[in-house]
Length: 401
Image (cartoon, rainbow, N blue to C red):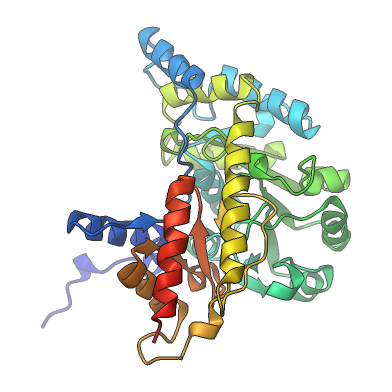
């Protein structure tokens, strides 16, 4: 058979895998379509509705005719609101030229990786990690360098680990705090210790992914590495968005702040891919940020209540251990003791399938986050669903074979 070169895919696409969280959601939807009840603890999406004042701003934008293209990097009003947000909430000062608004925080990260990475560059990523970091690096022809953290260290990278991983090819270090999937957050002192290592390598860019900033509850105030080490201001790109804090996942607005040269390069990438984010969403995001963070308080309170219940119940289950999180809406229990007890459950993927088939619970295998032997459980759902999931899981594990 003649090889059809016209159907051959690019090598870069063969290096990456589809989003496992979306795959779990799709499988759960299939079972629900078959009439089988499923409690979906797989997708990390707030179960709250977008606040009314934000919706009203979007409706007004439509009525006022703001339905055209905007400038590539975001409307003047939204960028002004982002600058004010950084100053008010993070004590970080930026100019509008240091801000880029994109179609979600994921888009901001993709723009950054595309703008500064060359073939053979290395991106240091602590594991467990958000699923997209390594694949974004691969799409930019760079190599992800994974630093494995462990349960005993609260899933936090140490300065010694960071130092050992840095080479002359290191270009980016990714920090996500609080973390998806572990929910762990670095303290100011821990970030300062990491910064002391990074300061020795002025060619490295730090990516501070702060998307779960407003779900932090273990300590206050929230800090990122620039707060801990102002000397890294010119070497750090801070990425954030409105999706998690304001229950605006579908609006697709994220933003990045950093050195003007890097932001300009990211803008160039965006100008040749998506152009501007949706105009209506930008007006909604502006209203969200100008309204402050008061509306995030009841959401965070609900997440904390669900967290406290779920983690306590998980730790009561024989064979499971789970660290309490500092924030986010995820629990990350270890299920290693259940693996290889039977021929059908030998890894965390099969354990997740066991829970879906026998308990009607959708979770994401830890291997998707670079942490085999764990599962991620999202409690961004009602307390009623969390309680039901716990009871179903208890029953399923009693019959585990």
